[in-house]
Length: 115
Length: 112
Image 1 (cartoon, rainbow over the protein chains, first blue to last red):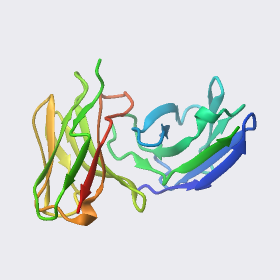
Image 2 (cartoon, each protein chain N blue to C red):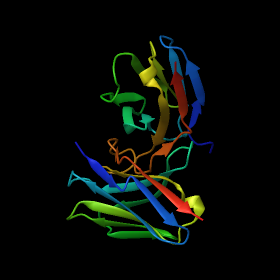
Image 3 (cartoon, helix red, strand yellow):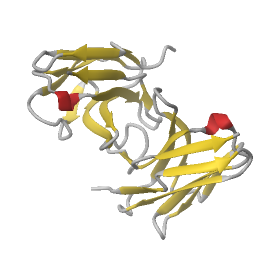
Image 4 (cartoon, one colour):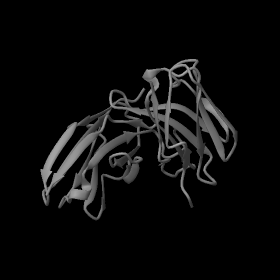
């Protein structure tokens, strides 16, 4: 089955700096890569996703890049703010949403943005 | 839309007791997922329903765990008997074909 590795497990940055979280996946058939943000005591919430026919996607201060050849994808957060502090999970699946239920999650990255 | 609804939000029970967690998916979503989250194991998929039918329960830890979806708007996850190692946050999530997975607020289960 799919295996998703996520690094680093913890990341501390100063407010205003950029943060990068990296994930690798094992199944070359995977073509859907969402990122979820989970604040302390809250539910995981989708913040951005990318499909394999796209190399990069941006939404304001967050962006995701995908390298299918190397089987890795990354989350980039620019101009970080204290409210960006949370655990971020990457995930991979074949298909999207309900069309493939085996969405495999990484172990998560605890991002701390220091004011 | 109220989103995915779970109850109870917190459950504290003694070892050996039966625990029932409940979930109401988003209306119109035909896929429902139960996840367990712990520090050690992260987010684990326990069971997946599609159109109310269990498709894959390979993630259910053992026979003490069971899940049902009697209709499109309700699902339960039952643990009988409960054990301290079952302590975790249990999330229900739902989605529709080609939509992203939406998680409920979770149930924090503590078994003493």
